[in-house]
Length: 301
Image 1 (cartoon, rainbow, N blue to C red):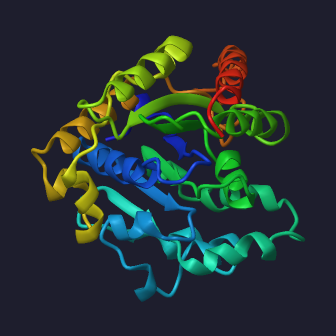
Image 2: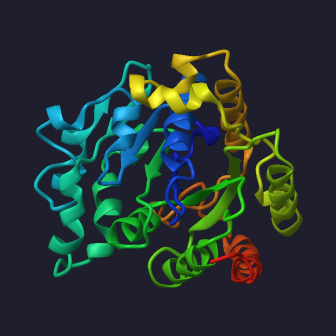
């Protein structure tokens, strides 16, 4: 099955410079859910912690090749990709050595585009490519944003939810201006929602008020099953398929799939997507960035 009417698949960077907001959990479970729904998915792990791979049941320590070798040009991404136990779901794993890539790439030509260049030979093989970004705004994240067509931002339903997001979206604007003009912020996903607290509902309401349809309808709850799934090396959709977290990620995957597909940086002028002008989306994203910057400035530091 080919997503989006036969056009090239979507490349979605899951990013938020704040740590512990559910980036990896969201990336792993969206990939697993979309694979279950018949779409070919690849999860590219750009975080040196390697949690995306372990969360999908792959031990990066047992592999000879990781995204570190791919970025340095010592291996192709095809040599790095590993299948998971879920049909149509593959992972390009990272290892701790990835943390040294930022230093080793400093003098490299087109260092910000290494991931985009690496993905080029395989991007047509997948309906969805998700990139799990590290909790920083360094060169690894810049590579992810330069390679992506869209950004998905998980936001924790807690008091410090907006901390750092203003800077993130400012950097997105710089990436768009200098490296990837087609990049758009496709969705904000509210995660770790605790229905027992009034604060969680207030955070969701505030974010929806400012960003409207950019915020996904589905809210991912905080659950024990979601927390324990990585420890057994399985997405929650496999570990506890009837749990609230699994149901939420399946519905979120459907919602993400139904969102319009932007033009992507891999497509030439004759592509089926080439007629889609990203200017409107870019202007809207710039407006959201300005709004979020104002909100973030008022957030507790």
